Length: 244
Length: 244
Ligand SMILES: [Ca+2]
Ligand SMILES: [Ca+2]
Ligand SMILES: [Ca+2]
Ligand SMILES: [Ca+2]
Image 1: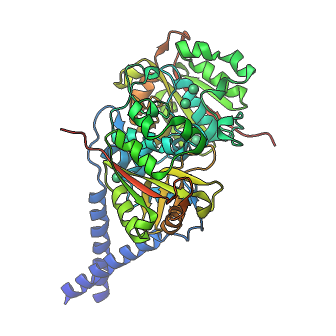
Image 2 (image 1 turned 90 degrees about the vertical axis):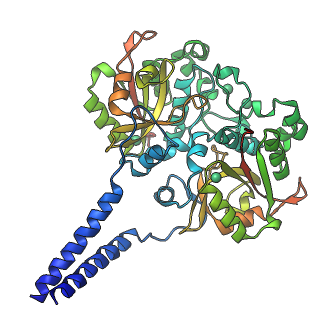
Image 3 (image 1 turned 90 degrees about the horizontal axis):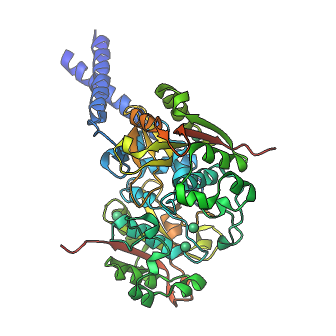
């Protein structure tokens, strides 16, 4: 009989602690629209995010696009450096090599796929970004938004962000996520399941901070027509496995 | 009597849960020397760090020094953008303004304090970095390592990193923290009390990842002579309070 009461007490104690911990962990409601990285909510999302394996290397190599049209090259430079793809020479860094938005287009075979002068004028479209990455030996999958559902995007992207060795670049229309501007590229770095948001490391760092954007909003913003390309926007997954 | 056993059971249940949680939270021992940002240990340190208020804005504006000698300018650009100091015009970004390692030296009064050509050849020393920041209206305190103890550094720096609105740039000798190179500047972004380490956002991103360095090692590396300056290295705290 004593044993029974002791057991009941132990169970009750455990229940009380778990319940209190649950109370403490209940999040307050999040605002609509993008949540800035350096806001109380944005900080909490990084710390609790369920898929942030890609965050660290992307943060290490986070850059600002060098011109208004250079969001594609800036995103590629982050991913190429993050993947550890062998970089061109960079005399400004002595013996060290590193991808920059300048040396990205140094190789003739890369310039055949995307001409840096044209990129300076008109930017890039999704397929071109994929083609440039492929020139560097990256395994690329280009996903146009009409070839995939929002649920497939959420699954593919959140699985990718939880796994090292591959990265995702999104191509979306800014106005569709409540921002000023047109078509844009940036890598995504983390996913928070509870709020169903992705962290976009926005390469227009002079303009917008990194932001947590809802899966729904991000997908709708990818599901828009890039009139230069005559195709829908979407996203790219990029992996690198050096040949043995 | 039943009540007594129930109470005992509740207490025992609580103790069991707290003990199990403690077991789960016990960290494994950390390696000697710098801990890379994107290692299992480095990731855990960010998430558990007790002073990381400065991390987010510095990560947002993290840059690579543009030349081998430009660690000072790169560190200043991160801090100026992080502080929200009014930036020079940047035509490459349209209507937006942003500090870059190029426009930092555009103003004549800044070039009087530090000549960019000389910086390209020889880099900068601690007092010069402070003087350039002051030209932009930043409130600067320069701490040479011989004017302060390791305990004062730990206290000042960890308090600063826990507080928004001001930042710290350290000036240290790389070899003294087990790295290749000479004198170096970089901002620090977070502090972990348990391991007594600071996160250095190393601006030589082509060379070293961000790293968690022990307070002792970092202080000894600041407590070295900069022969160009004829003074000890140290650190700078920088705040900005726009005039009302
Ligand atoms: Ca350039
Ligand atoms: Ca990944
Ligand atoms: Ca430059
Ligand atoms: Ca601070």
